[in-house]
Image (cartoon, rainbow, N blue to C red; front, side, top):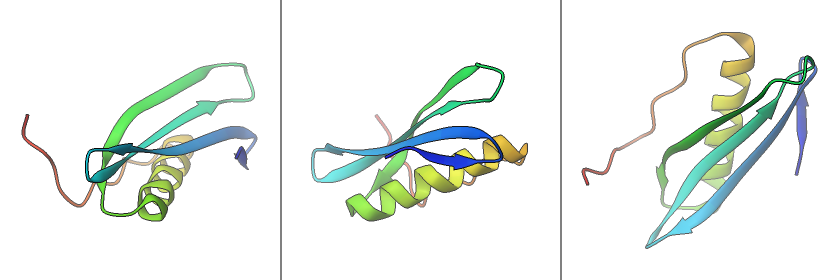
Length: 75
């Protein structure tokens, strides 16, 4: 699903990664600049990962610092 925030098209997604879900997001600004924020963090549910991707994208578009994911995985 594509969402719009302040003229930017936001495409959040959550993909299965083992027993967790990975949050990701792509952003297309009005000027045509495309940005992928990459893997944003792992979550226990698909809905939480998706919601976090939306929060990160809106923060990026607004020029605010990205929120931190609830936990990190050491690889």
